[in-house]
Amino acid sequence: MVLGAGPASPVSGCPEVAELEANLPCTCKVHFPDPNKLHCFQLTVTPDEGYYQGGKFQFETEVPDAYNMVPPRVRCLTRMWHPNITETGEICLSLLREHSIDGTGWAPTRTLKDVVWGLNSLFTELLKFDNPLKIKTAKHLLGEKEDFRNKVDDYIKRYAR
Image (cartoon, rainbow, N blue to C red; front, side, top):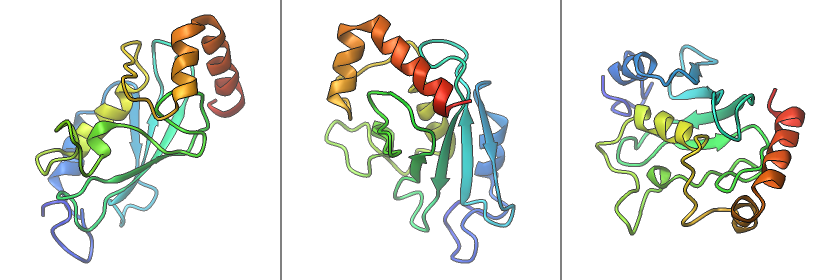
């Protein structure tokens, strides 16, 4: 069954879930709290490099009935100091946008695997902040890298262990 194709259980028996689990980055783990609700899952990202190394970051993903015409809803459950993730869990990641002017938003050809890899990319050293969600935090990173690292470390110690 295609993810989102049936009203009863959007992902039961879904090959996309199997593909997701088989193609996770080594820094990611997926957990389905309720095996009867594969449309709700948690992702843990444990970066092995960069500013966020040593942290454990939890995300909650809900796949709506209209998937794959609309993106899944994703929220970060771990407080952190990040230019594209608010302390309340909002995430700025272009592929999670239903409509995008630059063409990098959600498209029906995207998959949950793309979402996981996109979330994982938020923690690499290759951070790009052309259009950050938190401008003050992005300026902090660009202007005071060492102080930024210290603040990230403090958040990791307090919230991401």
